[in-house]
Length: 114
Length: 115
Image (tube, rainbow over all chains, first blue to last red; front, side, top):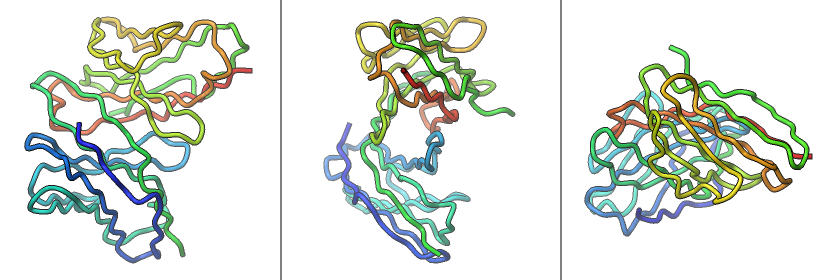
């Protein structure tokens, strides 16, 4: 699986957009970009994933550059409850009916301040 | 639709005892994954199971650790003869049988403390 690089920490003011970058310059054509977050002491939570097109759901937007070497997770209106460690993970999908292990790196610790 | 259920939430064991951690996947999910998070560290994959089969145990320590996911009942992560270094949060996740295009759903974890 391709390696990812994320800043260790970021701050964001409450109500503003939080833009979390991730570099994955060695990504291959069949690898997806996944984002998870872990709020302190809780289990990780799936946020979003994508292959090449930008994706949006009720939690966030995922912007993937055209060359797919980097991506940005956008929380449009950050709240205090978004304070968490955010993990960017690159993984190829397996055959149908097969699962897959995810390799969580160190992630970005996002602090949303009042 | 209940989420991934793990129990117990907290488990204290003396050195040398056995620890049994249980995970009930979400309804309809047939893939189970176990991860370990040591204090102040990231999540590390341990094992991936389907019903009655271990698919990938590349992250499992070779000794003292075992996992199963029987036809009936929850998945069990078993740690024999626990040592202080086993103290960690153990998270279970599940995904549906056609899980390739879905994210996992994680449980709330079991915090194991070895004294």
